[in-house]
Image (tube, rainbow, N blue to C red):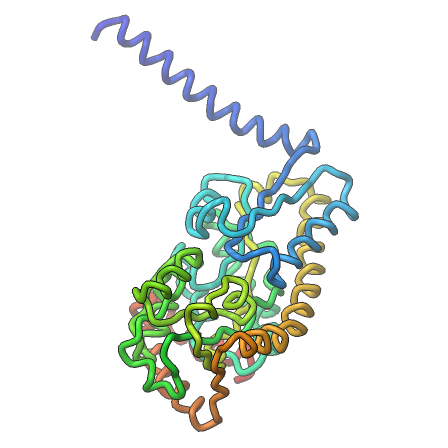
Length: 341
């Protein structure tokens, strides 16, 4: 082989090795020199409770820290979609974003997805019982082997309800409707079993899709439905609470492990404190958001217990997909035991 080619190839290889080493060195220097900024990217607006609680988290880090760790907020998907951010984390990017078990299932921790099963939880206390148990701790540890670290899990995202262009009064009315869901398998099947046709889509695209008629509805907590102004183009809301959605804040495990013990403790403890604040905001704002939607012309259906029984009966088919989801044997029974159901 030409010696000149060998020399050039060796130069490129050496340069690549140096670049990798410098990247690692810069990350280490950022932490050790006290200049690490973690970028929190999220799809919600800052006006929503979750946006306000993130401002609180940022403030707590500044007040209780020594300046060596900072948070910067990027609402409205400014840093990219949730999947793009999580992909970046697996390569060591300094991102934090909110995600749920349905997304973690798509990243290889299959059993985690059950937390997003429709009508799994009867109340919020069952959610908190689950995240404090051994099964949940095991799921978090498995996620770390995939490069992702859950910082905290105690944030309410809210009760997820369904907003549609045509009125829905019972589960049968969803038949044939195209309902937007986040882009993951679990939430798609969760609506398919109810008779709808699920459509995965980024939240930022939903308003236009409703406006043009390419979808017939969307689902989310009240704060998000109102915050994204979706009620302007879909005027019917059924309070089905098909998922009690607690959410987690997740980051690169590599980046978390590069923090000093003091920085790790600061990040986790302030995240949990901000979570308590978030949950208060969510509870206080629910009635307010509902009233504002009514005042702006939304027709609200509060389903009877009999109607909700119809939803739950339809949703039972979701758990027949254990093999599709790749769940371990007996997972549903194990989780029900964890939450005392």
